[in-house]
Length: 170
Image (cartoon, rainbow, N blue to C red; front, side):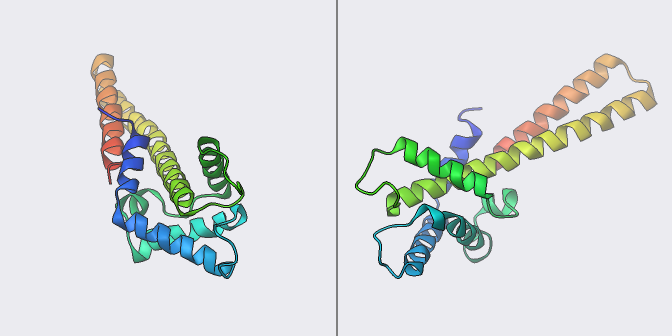
């Protein structure tokens, strides 16, 4: 199918003007909270920044991936995990505790792409077993052969996974 789901989401978010605008707005909001006394965003501000980004991307500057896959803002665990991923990939700077605009953007892409992919995985794990149970139930009631039921289950599982994968392009 080409590239992985997380790569599709990351590319979609990175190339989105709505996402860039929301990141700029959240970054400016965080700087204004510290009254522009520091040249970046502190890690303790990232949870509020995540909420601000989610609000921007779900109401003011809607992004299709956020609307479909993120009904609520990313959790604190996801925020911290994204920060660790960004800090791990960047070289040490003068003040590693501050995120500049570029690092903030990287963090936001990492955070929202991992949150979208996580929710998409949950959707697949929820939809497939329910569909399989339904197909197996219908197969038992109609006394269909096990090969027919097995094939139908396989086709259904592939169709659900493909549908979720294709919806990740935004």
